[in-house]
Image 1 (cartoon, rainbow, N blue to C red):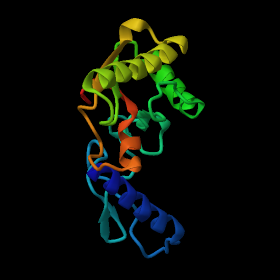
Image 2: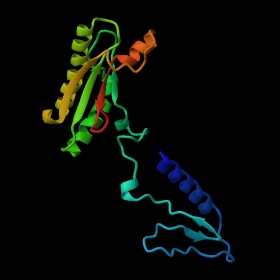
Image 3: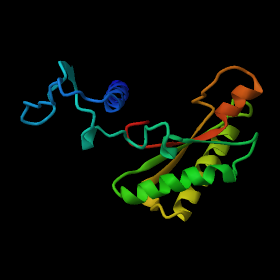
Image 4: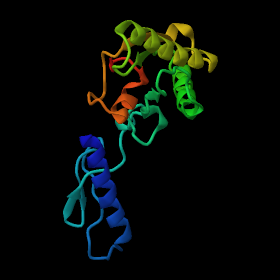
Length: 179
């Protein structure tokens, strides 16, 4: 997160510099570092380079503007069919997994607290298996997918309201290190 703020600040600085004409009496840019990563002298003030290194680029799985950062599929009460609105998101994950054959996904099926523990475990498994099946149909290898039910054990919200129940009726797509 700090890197993102630093990058945004650097871009703002660069944008401000780009719109300011240089006069002949200002010093030019001087970079004395061997790697080009040290502060750069510009007209009497220091500024850091703005171009991120390849290893500093934002991870598409964590970029809030990337569809891959979306990980939850929500369901209607007592249902386990994946709605069409989630298929583009699942296709994006299928494409990503196809390009990263060593990565595995864990799909967790969740329920709200209504219903017995046994019923919710079964419903959560149907939800997770449904997402797994769609990803397989989209080309993901079965060996890269695991589906489990958490039933009502991992709620996002604990209030007893319909809005809260709706947050708990979901499947979550998780990558290694996220579960």
